[in-house]
Length: 98
Image (cartoon, rainbow, N blue to C red; front, top):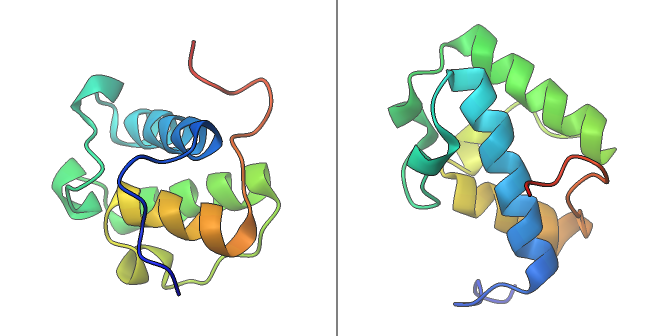
């Protein structure tokens, strides 16, 4: 497995931006406060919020995700990297940030 790139390709950045927006909605916070290196637990999601967020991501990107998703990929940066590298996921069309 290759280590994460320092500068992600534009498609990977779009995916991260989309994930950040989904997290900001789930956690009711400003998307600008989301950081790729911060543990997802820092955003105050309870277990039902985390399940809902995982289902939102799964349905939007069309990939079956493990129930341990946020345990295995505890930061948004790691999650975006996993989805991009392992599944070739891109930000869903029409849901990209301006």
